[in-house]
Image (tube, rainbow, N blue to C red; front, side, top):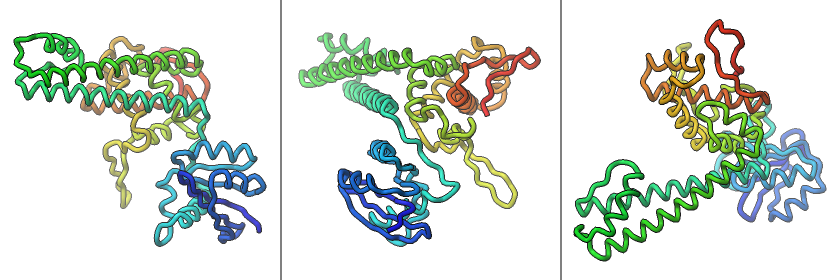
Length: 350
């Protein structure tokens, strides 16, 4: 049996494998457990193995690479066009095997354990932030039903809530006071967890030389720097900064036909968490644009004089993403942009 390409449809405990020969014909269909799959591939020599980028794919990809195989992870949306007729696990595996052999297919780099650890930290922290927001909104709703309004901002709620619980003049029933006290306790516990997570992020960023270089870019702090490394590593998967900005979803969508170019709003594809961090960092830079380097400050003054404030923020986020990719991919330090004709050029972002 001559195998050239293998496609594996991943599952929780069951994995479906389809093998193609050099002519693209299906020569093997098998179903394995994870242990059986690794035992089967240990004695195989194939050109490449393809899998969809999903939960568990990075672990299995590293295990197959240790056996000497060339493993490629494919985004699920790029596999869909190769699925024929109905859907089944074997049909999906065959589609993966066909897609992985395409010369212009885009692949997902396999993450290291350190990247997965950083990604896990960010995912857990983000869930805690969302939970804290939900608790704050619930407290506001309960108080509003009793005719008590709180100013916008979590800090005002934190300052007002203890007094409300102790003020006997407030006509709050005992059950409501008990619920508010429990919700306040939950807020305090979430605050402790978030503080511990932020300390861990700060420690990781200080110990990483790459994070320190990224931290020098305006609008990028330890949180964005560690999230960026967890997502793309050294940035080698992208040829230039614009490809990375497009992957984050910070470039316009295009709907052109008949030779007429039509650009729409940003695509919002890819990593929404990373995109949100870049946009928030860009807004912070815009807020303090007069304190930036002369070149960047002049560029921001020209940018904000024309479009809407939010449009300018997204344009700056695009620029920051390209700068971050250049720092990662080229291994250089960030050099602030200078005014035209003042001498040296800024760090290239292409």
